[in-house]
Length: 207
Image 1 (spheres, rainbow, N blue to C red):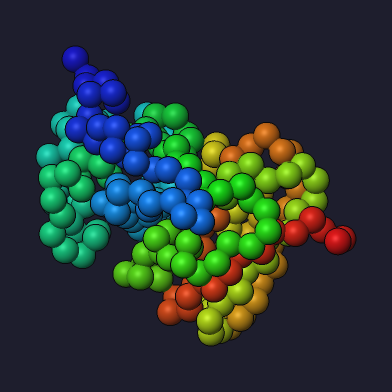
Image 2 (tube, rainbow, N blue to C red):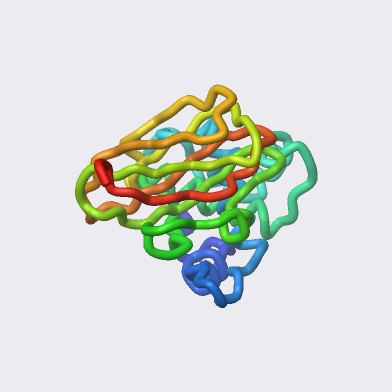
């Protein structure tokens, strides 16, 4: 019998309990749990993005994927790390949805570099940032970097549907504009190379 998602050894550390909102004085989520989420969405999803149910068998379990994961991560991975990445991959493929994570805080005002840093994967030169629900209407997400950035900025929903995409061609600032329904979770996938994200500013278009 296939092992159910609830019995995979990822446990509540990543599922719900430790991924808490990053309020101004709140304690950061468990670093290992957060790092696994960021690693999956900045590295693993490069190959497995949009590959949903029926595209892979999971009967062999996480141990059989250990060598594959280490090869693509470029180094050794612990059993806990492999189990976490395997669980996320399985959920994404079987539900065609993002692995659930809690956004930093409500998507308004400005998010600064300090609170964005945990969602950065320096090895991949990329960020994965849960934005949560954006206010309904035409919205702008303004990105500011510490140096010219080369890469791509993409926003999708929890159902992995792309709603906005912009190229970064030595840009120190970039504005992403999209229509938000107000009831969908949104995620920012950002490849910026060596550039560090200094701030995200949320604006209503036309203001």
